[in-house]
Length: 255
Figure 1 (cartoon, rainbow, N blue to C red):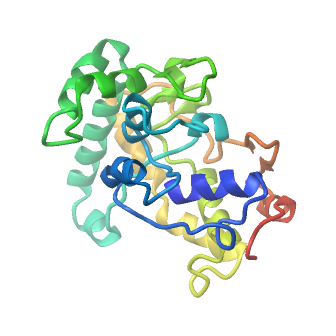
Figure 2: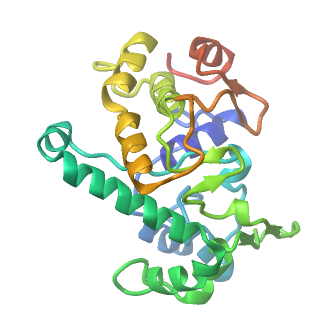
């Protein structure tokens, strides 16, 4: 997903990520050292690495992903279909456990403990003081502009300003596959939008999420597999009912 974010951001500014720059994939933990020794000029990754380059005086943050796409999706839980079919009870138990963890992580009262856990050597292995500000939504961007102080700008796990974070909206899946079409990814297996829609329906098991949520007693379960239209920082709109119009509106693309 970081590849998608940085591609979108560059292309919105008129920079072709395939022609004008060398876009490489590196482990997130190596980004800070890459910026420190000058082997890279910029990167896109999640917390705490962007904040680390500001805290260490190495560089600045040009944009938060929350600014590029407000309340965007981030990580997904993916489980092999054959395992799900063979282990329905374990699948539901796994989903319920993740949901309980998401609710715990989203409670501001638990953020201090969450930060302490994640800062340890078993996880991110960074100082607590570097991890704390992003998890509270406090970002010193390092570019001389006012700091961002908004809890919604940091990582969210259960609910955000658009509703459910946990629920797997099919409209979000469709955006990722539409962007894959845009850049010519997986062209052999993803030739068109009809294929994209079919893949979403085959892979997205929001029905299992609903069953687990109901078993857990979750309230405010989304009643639609689409979150509706999405608007990006450059004014471009993605309507899951008409992804072709979105593709047509983009100036830099491979499709």
